[in-house]
Structures are given as C-alpha cells and as structure tokens.
Length: 137
Image 1 (cartoon, rainbow, N blue to C red):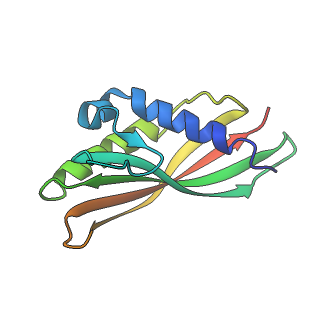
Image 2 (cartoon, rainbow, N blue to C red):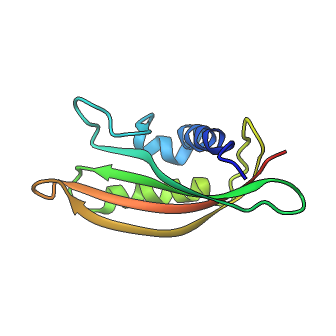
Image 3 (cartoon, helix red, strand yellow):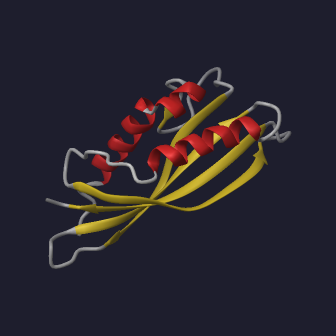
C-alpha cells in the first residue's frame, strides 16, 4: 500500500464536483481545497481531511480513502446548505470517476454532521464523510 493515489483521487473528486450540473447549479465554481481568503461566497464546498488504510489484495495494491467534503454557508437556515450537500452526495455516490493513477472501485457515504459555527453561529457547516476504494493498476 502507498499513498500514491491520494492526489489522483482528490483531483478526480474535485473535477467531478466542479463538472456536476447539480452541484454547479448551486455553488458554481466555489469548490476549494481550503476556505478561500477575502470575501467568502455565501455558500461553498471544501475538500477536507482524509484518512487512508491499506486494502491491497491478491489482485494488487489498493487503499481505502475516507475523505470529508464540507459545505459552508452564511445563508439563513440550513436548507441552502443541505441542498448543496444533497447534490454533492448525489454526484459522488456510484460515481465512475477516472483517476490519473489507478482506478476507483467505488465511493460510499458514511456519515454527516450539520451544525452552526463561527463566533456568532453565522455559518452553517455540513461535513460529509465518504469512503472510496481505489486500486493501483
């Protein structure tokens, strides 16, 4: 096992979300590796923490990547953020995303949490955790 497909998976997830009509209808191109500096969009998506474990088998090297996608919004209420989270989930589940190294076996939803954050609770934050199985070719 190695972390060799980590960058390929992140780039593929980013590109897939950026090109998904449901996600882009709600946030446009406001998808980031980290929260942007300066004036923040009202609602945006960030790709976040990741944990990787070996899942090599007799067919070859592979890994399980558990990664977080976060929706942040200053819109009133949770409805706008939940609409984006739904679109992200729909885009990733059963996605056939090509990787620059290896291939994606599948993506599955694991869990989500929604809460208010910020000094005065001005942000709605939804963190979704997904599990991806990748195989090196």
